[in-house]
Image (cartoon, rainbow, N blue to C red):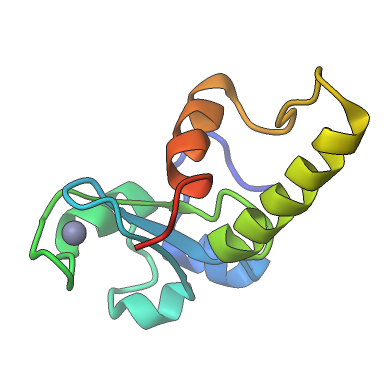
Amino acid sequence: MPDPTKPVTLADLDRQGKLAWVYCNECGRERDVPPRDLGLPLDTPAPEAGKRLVCSACGGRKVTVRPELYPGGVEEASRELKRRRRARHKAGPGWQIGVLAEDQRERAGSWLTGPRS
Ligand SMILES: [Zn+2]
């Protein structure tokens, strides 16, 4: 079990076979990256890693790094969301993204449901 009192490090993600979710707060681009591909020491805590990265698209420095939010990464989550939306049309109202926390759900709405640029 990971120690919940310590921030997750890139090494933790690597060990667990998880991706690092990298999000640019300036332009909204996001990617899931293998932790080793970030080019940072693996003992870097994920929140710290964000401070050391620069967005390659806009040069923004407000980058957030977290453990992957969704199994398989955001692209997979996006596909899954579309699948579920189709299912929702059949199932009727009442469906929601139950696995996401409230704030994630809110943001997932703006990230994952709009057209991707
Ligand atoms: Zn950016």
